Image (cartoon, rainbow, N blue to C red; front, top):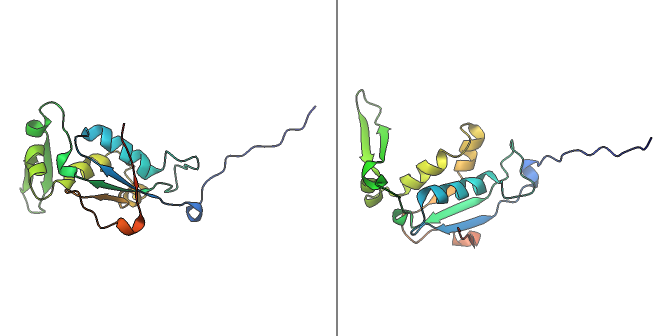
Length: 150
C-alpha cells in the first residue's frame, strides 16, 4: 500500500490579492458582451487564485459608455425603472434616452451589477467598477492596462 500526500485546495486570503487596473473602451461594443467580460474581471474569475468567497477581482474603468451598442430595437424598447421614494413615483426611461442624457453610464452599470452576486461581496466588487460616458477618466495615476474585448 502506497502513501499518498493529501492535496488540498488553496483558498486566497484578502491580504494576498493584488488588484490590477484595466481600462475598456465601450465604443461599438455590444452591451451584453461588454458586461459579461467586465463582471468576470470584477469577480476575479480570470485569475488562478479565484476564490468564490473572497474578492479576488480587479478594478475596471469603462470609457465611452454613451457609445455602447444595443442590438435589435433595444434603444426604443428597453426600459429602465427607478423609484423616487414618494408614493406612486415610479419613473421609467428608455435606453436610447438614457444613453443620450447626462447619465449614460447607468446603462453599463445596471448591466454589470445584475451579473454580480447579490450580496455584500457583490456590492464590494461593484465598487471597483468606474464608468465614464466620455473618453476621459481621472485614474491615470493607477496606470491601467488596456483591455481588448474580442
